[in-house]
Length: 346
Image (tube, rainbow, N blue to C red):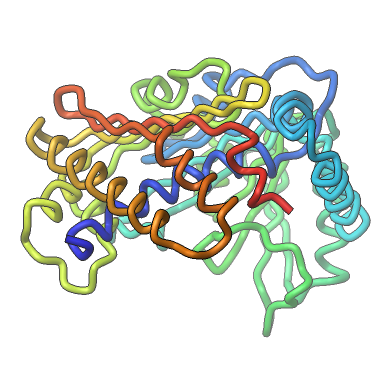
């Protein structure tokens, strides 16, 4: 049973991780108007997966309310942002939102996907790029050159020799070169060179309206996403060493679309993930496996003699996790209260 459910466990773990990231990791931008997820995602070049983060809403609203009883944690977050500003010359509090796109290559592998991000804020894009470039040249082992493309200056970076462990990384970009440019006066585009060029090229195809619709189904979300998975990609979500041709493996391989969101209101956060398979039977198989894993996990926590407070919180999280199906879609919902995760926040 445990082997059959191993792949499914990643989804439950991802729910908690996504929720914690959304309410804990994005910079403060007080006093700015709400960002438009739809318009900013639509500006991305053609992508298979898109992600939107409302940076302004998270720390201006969600974090102060959600962690109102943990002021030391908020202080740590602000201290970390101050440290990043001191090290890089870039104030992360000036960023309002992030729209990120992933596009699979012919190999249909996650680790070789093209990645591009549009970072919008109340700053001068050219000045932020200049500050970041100056810091990178001083502290990092890189080479850099410029090129003109579609009327903009594109800065292209390439690691030279070993990486500096203390050097801020530009993200998990699989390409050897990383590019950054001013998309407009207050928006920075970054990613692999091909994707940045595509974003700057007004004639390049944009993200499909269907994908944008998937990623914007929760208007007040602090984080939302949507994706189309080409055949074969979802099969790689199964981490088992031997990809047996059983019902669960076939169901995972049949996932064609996914979408979801994180919404924070006061001291509660709601996370939703939808998985669309080819048939209703495949959705039922995934749902059954996840619900079985939920029961097994509760038994394991109950028999654990470790920290009783943490065990109680984990049990409550599992109780607030619901997994159901609607036609060919698996619907996974989790409600997280601040009191449920307090034992894990340091």
